Length: 319
Image (tube, rainbow, N blue to C red; front, side):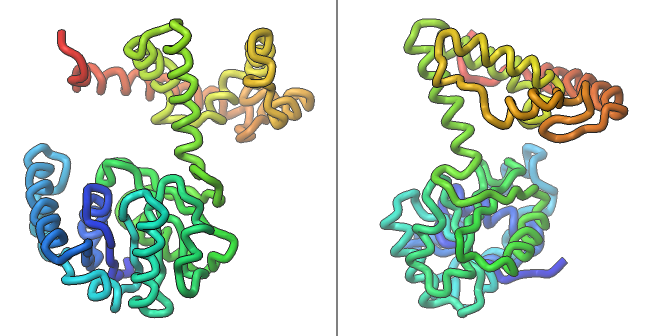
């Protein structure tokens, strides 16, 4: 594995968590913030947190030592980025703050240093306006809590160089995380999906159909129960795309525009591609693999329930 010099600008909970996982992967990390005092204080916090994570069995036994060896707090943003191979910006989600920070970063960093942003919703193309040599700029969106959520969105803008993408993928994957390439659109993929679910859930509560608590129960015990193993397209393929089309037709009796049948679904069904039962759908899983897939699915769901039983209910509500 190549060891990179990485600067993380913004050392709060997101930036700090990113610094932790990069350090545990063996990279040399400098954190920076609005002042040297804040960066130093946050480094102390990261070490204390890491110690608790070790005690809880969430980090390896030598995590504190490795983080202490690999992470330092810089005096200034300029000091952190001047010799860095890669920089990750993780400041608050306000475009004016990000623009000002990215301008400082790109002015002080080497001309070939890769610059990433941990923005969760702001267009990468808009942020790139503040970056000198914007071809080296890319969105690298970790989720909270960064040490424990395994997926990372990589978002390119129109001018992003194709050459930097494999480098960023290598670094992220060295931490044990998985990357997904996403186009530049407001909210990207993760938050468009997340907020679409929240919007519909909120409407159901407002219409008096179910309480917030009951909706949470429905989500985590039904379709949400499947999501650690399968994404929405795999779930649809296994359920049957013809079944999905029929359900859309039913929903349209009440909400014809809100639940209009997706064009891609209609095209597949019209072509006789119903998912795993026909050997072709969104993911084109061969029909002969269906028994193996169903067996895996069933084992996965039983294993998930055992894990939930072992952990017990989340401490959200009292008895």
